[in-house]
Amino acid sequence: MTKKGKKYLISLFTLLLLFMIGTSAMADDDDEHDHDEKYEYNLKSDDDEDDEEWENEQQTPFNAEQQNEYWNIWSREPRNDPNNALPITAPSEVKVLSDTKEMRVYLIPQDGQLLASIDALATVLGAERTYYPQSKIAKLTKADLELVVRSGSNAAFENKLKTPMPTKAVAYENSLYIPVSVGANAFGYRVLWDNKKSLLIFQSIN
Image (cartoon, helix red, strand yellow):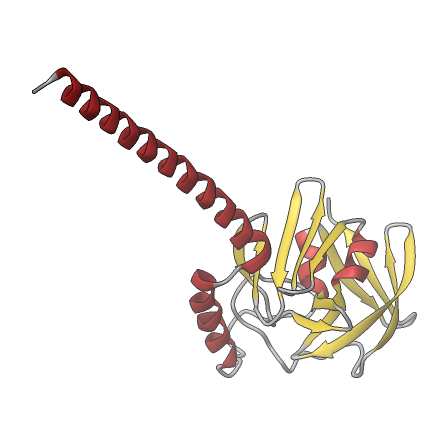
């Protein structure tokens, strides 16, 4: 083979090697971008089958022999008692007390749970709230704690761990509504009801 032919082969090999390295680096960048987008914005595909499985379990009749499922305690189990006796029977504003903070919060009784908006829960719990209206995904954060939920799903990501909620998150009035027990318990609070004062209390357990 001539010197010119050898130089040509070396040049061709070098170009091919550079192309392969560049393609690999681009693929890595795309993978990282896809992972972030999937977690924070989409939460689709691989989660859907588990959501359906939890939902099917919830549709079975509630068995009294099972552990009780309360409206104010998040058991983190895929079950719910739609016959829970709730402190209110129609959507209404309720006085809420948390630490030294007092405010009125709009609550919706649904499927044996009390639902509150992520905006109200963020204020009551002193958490930061992020809402993505197109994908209807909400994220609440406080210190090193994080809760991510999506409209139409009963799966919550509590500190990146997929956990079942007692009922689905629902989109209302440009916000996302979730069970008060989920929001409170995820950030170290228990929920109590003072019947005499018609007062919902978020009590810190830390």
